[in-house]
Each structure stands twice: as C-alpha cells, then as structure tokens.
Image (tube, rainbow, N blue to C red; front, top):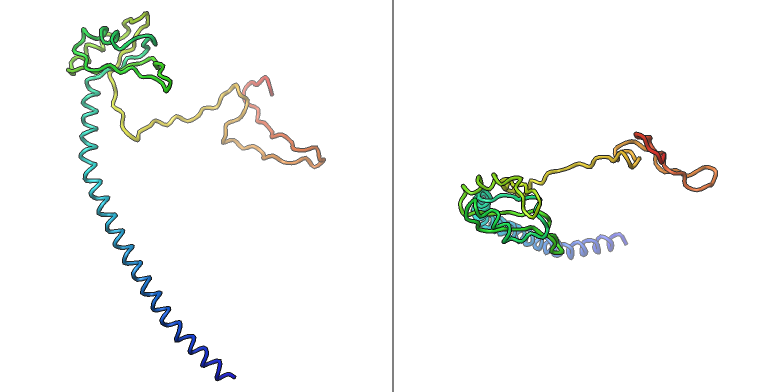
Length: 197
C-alpha cells in the first residue's frame, strides 16, 4: 500500500513539472512584455514632454506679453457695451480688444479687460482710474498674469454670529441617554455673545 502511494505521488509530481515549467515560461513572457511596455511608455512620455515644453513656454511668454499691454477695469456698469468702453479708452492708444466678462447666463459680471496695441498705452489708461462711465467710478489697474497652479488658499473663518465653535475644537460625541429618552444633543461650547444659547 505504501509503495503504491509513493508511485502515485511520483507520477503526479512528473505531471506537475511540465505545468510548472509552462507557468514559469508564461510568467517570463509576461515580465518581458511588461518591461517592453514600460520602455515604450517612457519613450512616449519623453517625446510628449519635449514637444509640450516649448509650446507651453511660448504660450506663457505670449500671455505675459499680452498682459503687459492690458488693463483691468472694475466697477463697469452692467448695461455698458464694449464699444462704449473702447470710446472711453480711445484717448490712451489703439485698442486691440475689449473683453467684458459674463457669468454662465450671459449676464455681465461688472468688470472688463482692455488690450492695447502698444504697451505705452497702459500707463495712459492707468491715469483714467476713478474716471466715470455711465455714472460709475471705474477702477483701472494693470492686468496681472495668472500663473497656472498657483491658486490662493483662503481658510474658512468662524462666524461669530452662528454660535458654533470652529471645527477643530474638542466636542464630546453623540451619546445615548441611559434613561431611554433618545439621543442627547451635542454639548455646545459657549462662544462670544450668542442670543440663541
């Protein structure tokens, strides 16, 4: 009986060896294929980055050049047309483009950008700060260039009128009353004067 078990185990082991070799061969093929794919991907990424960098640099440089010839105009009347803004800034120099920003419904946001042909016109346009158009005093400043990925972070400030403490303060969690009357409300930390506390 023991001899038969040894013979059967040996025959099973002989059958497993070709399967194991086959699996090792397939694993080696998969590893080679993955290495080739990584190599191709690195090559494509290198080509893409070398193709994008000059374009990005030139677009950033051209954007800065256009912004150096532009001014921001705030407090623009909502009924003001681009032609009226152009007439207002015509004395400064040749106006290339007027952009009145609108929201997603097409309503004006109350500010505009004026792009001039010559950079010297910006200094002349800055002299029109606090001039009036449609009875509103305009705020004219030099246009700044936006740097991608440099969004300013503004942390939330606690509202003293709401009566709730800031998020970071320690508060006991909800707990259930031992007397069976349901959930006991959270304890509120007293803040400044709160008429509802």
